Length: 122
Image (cartoon, rainbow, N blue to C red; front, side):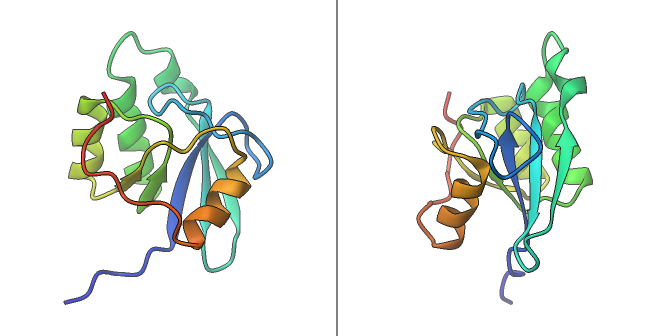
């Protein structure tokens, strides 16, 4: 059986648009730009509720992404607990996505320039 094609990706972002910078943090990112790779339509998922948590921000953010149907996450870094939550939700992760806009990250992902991570970053 083949895997379903990737259609919905989430990118940690400092703002709601494709021209905003990628936020290198996952759990405490400002939010996530969701991109439908077929239509390139975007929506924004605010992560404010996770930012204020003393701990567990990554787990909460992973749950939020699972609820909105993200199949892939592009971000800078994912810790061990958030990693486990993302794996449980069957969300593939690309780490090391930094110093670029959300739109640039999407373009590089579509071009196959990113590899999926196989472990948390720290």
